[in-house]
Length: 79
Image (cartoon, rainbow, N blue to C red):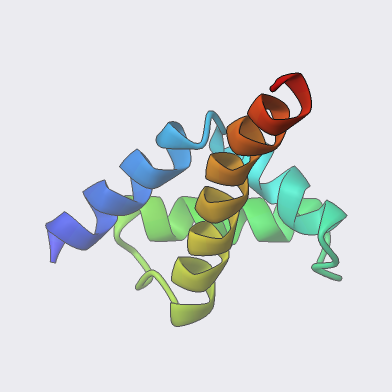
């Protein structure tokens, strides 16, 4: 089970985010919970005290896709 949690930490880091940064981004994207509650949820997932939800895996996938798309957009505008 620990592989799921280390992968979760690695994916957050690969996005250039901290746990707090991910909580802020989720709030910006429309999560209606208090930021401190979002952060606590993330911390529980990182610690392995809660499973990494399907919704969180999906959100990370979308953030990863968006971060990969950004360099392509800037290359096209400079090309």
